[in-house]
Image (tube, rainbow, N blue to C red; front, side):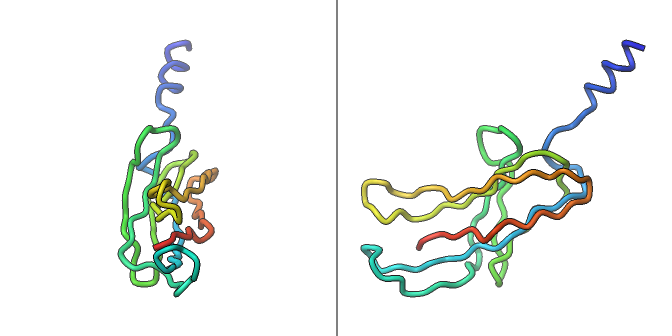
Amino acid sequence: MLAFFLFASSCSKGPGPGGDATVSGKLLVQSYNSNCTIKQAEFYGVDEDVYLIYGDDPSYSERVRTGPDGVFWFPYLRKGKYTVYSVTKSCTVLEGDSLISTTIEITDRKETVTTEDIVVIR
C-alpha cells in the first residue's frame, strides 16, 4: 500500500504542458511621444512577444507572438499557477524596460482562462 501511495504522489504534475486547458488574452499597445507626455495612439499589438511562466519557474517557459488582432494563446496546459507577461517601455530614462504581468490559476482540467488586456507602452 505504501508503494502505491508513493507512486501515485510522484505522478502528480504541476503547471506546464500536457493538459487540456488554455490561457489567452489580448495585448494592448499605447503609443506615446518620446517623453511619454502625450498618448498618440492605442491599438491591439500585432506580432508582439508574450511570455508564460509555469508556477515558480525562474524564467519563461513559453513565448508566443500576438496575432493580427492582438490575441495571444497558450494551449495544452495542466492545472496550476501561471504568470503571463510582456515587456513594456518605461517612461523614465532611469528605469529602462519593465514587465507587465498577471498571475492566473487554472483550476479545471479543460478550463479556458482569459486574462485582462496586457497594456504596454511603445
